[in-house]
Length: 245
Image (cartoon, rainbow, N blue to C red; front, side):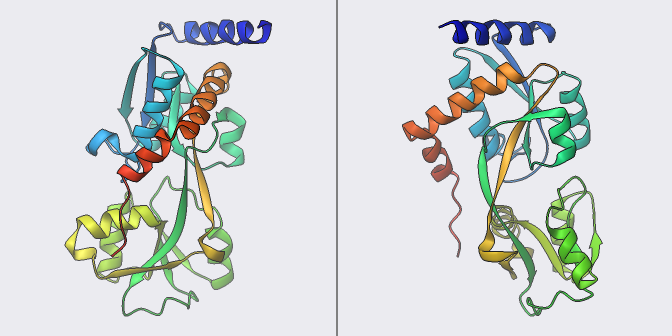
């Protein structure tokens, strides 16, 4: 009982720092379809998962999601304009400034290429990954095969470059590729191949500023666990599932 009481007190103190009532939650994300996006239904799959989790964690809360360029949203969250931002890969730099939630979703990373291209050879090829997207294990691949990394402003630009053969490969998650090849006819001839061993699942997280986010991330994680146990989490995933052709 004492531990629970202290957690609630900590939560109220955290929210007071923001100058908000405990029933107001401000979040920010960026453009990462189909996971997040201002003009996607419900703001995208991950936006829906995060909103439902916060609603579970803070019953009756007013939850507002804004969309900003990734770098701005990250800085504004660290400066406590927002309680959290999402979705992010984990790295040491972010871990120094933010608390990471339990994984909100796992993704499968793949490489897209033109149907006629040789997918097994990476030597001296070009690979596209938008600015703001984590390179992760790509660095090692690029160094090993002397590849050139191209970084436009958006994933849509990467797909356009690949379709016009201006790059050889495009790195993204399988769901992202399904979104673009399913919504843009000019990309339907593109194919994907596994990246890494057995297309290992990679977690994406909601992140919370270390200056005041401990109590909130604790409540968020408990609510996320409850959603998974109840089956509601899987229902949301299934409602957004894209079937491979």
